[in-house]
Figure 1 (cartoon, one colour):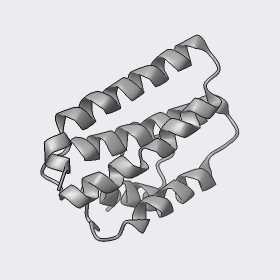
Figure 2 (cartoon, helix red, strand yellow):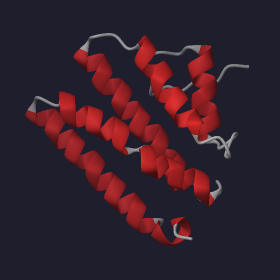
Figure 3 (tube, one colour):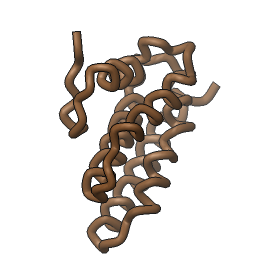
Length: 124
């Protein structure tokens, strides 16, 4: 069964399966799952900057949603927090318009708020 993630424009079954495993910590003791996911997303990405922007925003959303889910294991949520910089850095690299910079600042703000809110649940 393939899962659907509406935030992503590419709906490859194998990538959606990885997204599902990450979002719901289905392989919580497999931290390399995130690296595999990023690599697979990169392999289907095209050179369209708008599509790249949407992909990185969707990656951020998946990771922030996972980080915010306090029903998931703490170590998995920390793994997502430790990797959320990847889509943010990619967005920083390609942001050119004032709207994109504003949106990027909103994402950084969202990350600060969420990480502060869940700080106690994420610390050992």
